[in-house]
Image 1: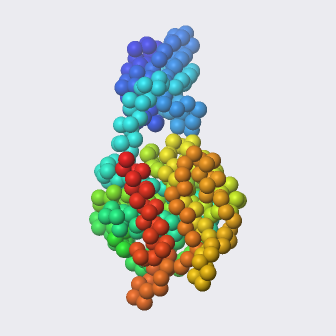
Image 2: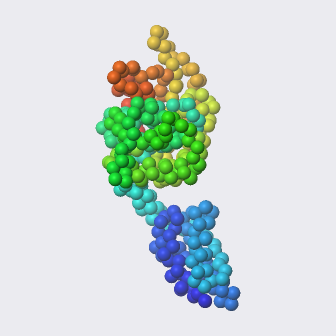
Image 3: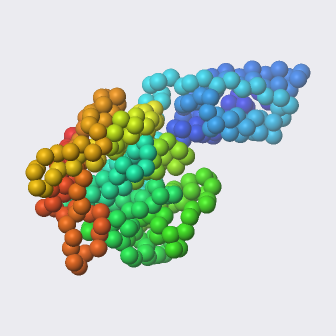
Length: 352
């Protein structure tokens, strides 16, 4: 029959699913009780997060190890590790996770762009913020993570597809911004009928199998709402910052608050709110008409304890004969200037 020392020795190599450190490093085995007559082993162990799916997998792993080595039955109890232990190893785990996302780059800052519902201009904000950051001298990439409703390539006028170099995809570059999107892998705008796990693998490959090079910022255009893909992104990125896009309409702001709350619950900082389609300004009279109402952005920012980064009016980009990019605002366009201000605020917040 197993001894207490043997049980501890067997469990020392087991890794905490969140901190990615061994039980030995974490001093995770808190108590071991052996009942020799029944070949029963009871273990109390400390882990970073209890009552999760990862805990269930860990439980199966531990039971399997102990039964394979002579235990007939196994009793397990989990408790949360002390805060100081979690804090000590969490930052190292986050840094390690981030460094593997983009093939070793530790300096890239992640910004997710989210909304509560579709049709509020989230993707438009993503691409124009990316362009404005590039105009500020930053190296920028975009992952079009709105896998069912991808639109970034069309908005930017991207016509090429990613190249392949060895086992890596080379993102398409447009206006100095690197882009990867599900749209590059779908023929003739066909509908996506994949299930969640398949989409999750594709999303993960956008990080690990794309040769991004050195980036200052990687922006992710999330699907609207709080579904599986948005949750996957929050779990993939331990320290991303989030921008919430809404229109002034109360309903849009109300549902956008849910996306913001998900970011907060997954410990992601909200950079601020962008209010899109804030008003229409008449060229003839100069008066502002609040087509979709007024005040939604401010109310949302207040609900999420953040600030409004900018209010963007309804207006088309200038038409350029030789350039097809239907959603990109030129640098001297009034809205292009507003995006410049938003980008400057984002850089100040990200690099303070």
